[in-house]
Image (tube, rainbow, N blue to C red; front, side, top):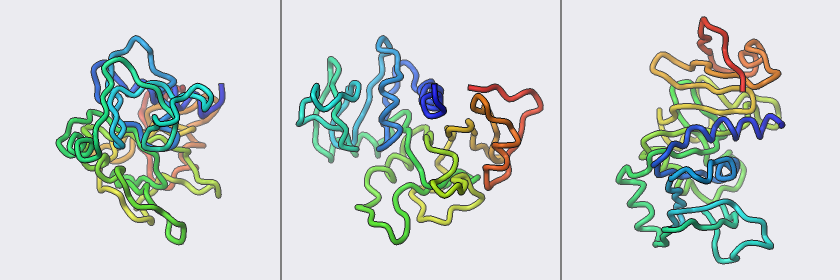
Length: 216
């Protein structure tokens, strides 16, 4: 099992029985494939679906049925379809228990930058801003460093912010980190990674528990 799969498996534990959950574009959508099929949850996609099922391969998919990221998805019994106005009314009224989003940067106070990099075309901030502001719990799923080896966990975001002080926990290929009033707290480290390696790869101070940090 590689680091990315371990990250997805541990992040999937954030999704609990009875929750209404929105999974953001990219890595978060893959969490569907790591959930217990017997678990009763409601997956919401902001393009107008509740009751989203597993992502399907092209040859098995209904070509008209996609999630907000364009992936072909299935539906579960009880699924519903509706327009964007209803979908975003659900988000804005606080009916999403958990959203799992990707990020370009997360600041130590929980600020989230996940919609654009200056000089690179972006279609718009989209539903990510609404979800980050209104979901009851916001979890980030991302690689610890960008393609240039630069930390994506920072003291202050240098990129345009999607929402301020919204992030509760960060799951990366190296660690699980909670965002608390007192700062960033290291909760878990990936198998084969040391605490010192996580500290060196993080451009913000980390609080290390006195007891040994468990691995995933």
